[in-house]
Each structure stands twice: as C-alpha cells, then as structure tokens.
Image 1 (tube, helix red, strand yellow):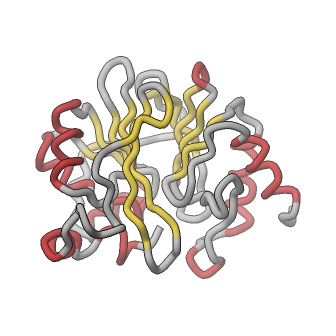
Image 2: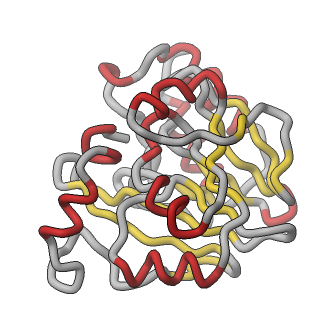
Amino acid sequence: MDAAEGGEGYGDLSRRLEPARHPCYAAGMREILPGILTWPWFSERHGYDFNGYLLRVPGGNLCVDPVEMPDEVLAEIAAAGVQRIVLTNRNHFRASMKVKQRTGAPIAIHPADAAFAREKGTAVDEELGAGQRLGPLDVIAAPGKSPGEVALHWPERRLLLVGDACVGKPPGSCALLPDAVIDDKARLLTSLRALAELDFDALLLADGAPILAGGRGALRRLLEGSPR
C-alpha cells in the first residue's frame, strides 16, 4: 500500500541492493496458478510482501500492480509481453513506469485515482471503469480505501485480484489496512461485502499473502467482525 515504499526512490534502491543477496527481491517470477505469475517485494515497514502479477490472458498479458523487481524479473516480464499495465489504486503506481519503459505497454487506472499517480510521475494512458472487461476479467468497483480502487474478477477461473481493499495478513486470512490510510471505511466495507458476493475461490492480494483456495471464505470471515 505505502506510496513512499511502493513508488518513490526505487531506481536508487535497486542500484544500492544486490537482488541475489537481499531478501526484498525475488530471483524470478513464480507461477502460483496456471497462467498466473507473481513476484514479491518485501516491505520491512509492513512486515509482509507487496506482490506484482503477470496474468497470461487471451488478447494480451496484463501486468497488475507491478512492484520493484531485479533486472531478471523485468527481463522475464518483457519476454512474456505485456498488453496493458493495470493499477488497482492510486498507491500502486510502484514500478509501473519501469515496466512501461521496458515494454511500451500503456498504464491504466481509474480516473478518480489517476491524479495522484500522475503527481508521482506515472504516465497514465488509459482509464479503467467499473463494468469494463479486460480480456476475460471484469473490472469491479471497490472504492473506500481510495475513491478509484478497483478489483479484477475472472469468473471462469473463480479468481479475484484485490489491490488495497484488503490485505493477506496473516497468511490465509484477510485484514484491513490501518484506518489512517483509508479514505472512507464505511464505503470500503460496503465494497468488500459486494466483492464477497462474487463467485471466487482464489484471492490474489497485492499486499500480503495470496490465498489460492478458500479466498471467499477468508474475506467473509473478515467481514463477520466488521460493523455494518
């Protein structure tokens, strides 16, 4: 989530650290589900991984919420090809410009979150809107943490990808970010309840541990203890 960690000073950081030795970086992408590849960047401040995703989908691969990566991962992404870079919320500009500069892919974000990303130096090319379809994935409105937060739902694969609406902490469970970074908590909870009504099993989280099975149940457990 953190904009300072997630988007500023990455070029300097990547030059200072040796990926093979430093725990922040992955040596390569992992295929956690068929056609779903991910790589982590460990946030020491938060105590969990930030995750970037490459989705192999008909019509062109999507790079979602790309986090910082060593050159080896960037080369893998470029070799696979990227049709579009998708940012689920204003804070997840992170390493999007690095991927754009290497692949030439356009960056897409909801217009309500676009201004913040642009202020951080992100060259936004396209707007995302609820109801839009990116290949087999539906763009789902998930406002609350920020006004333009979106999630991605792949109905045929029973898969949901979430940015900052919730995080995977501890592994196997869902949690909310601190109230201080949530614009409108009541609206966020309403969004999460709507997401919990979707048909999905795998819950891919941009922050924290993805839940590859039982994700819908984990989200519902989070909501059971939340006020209406």
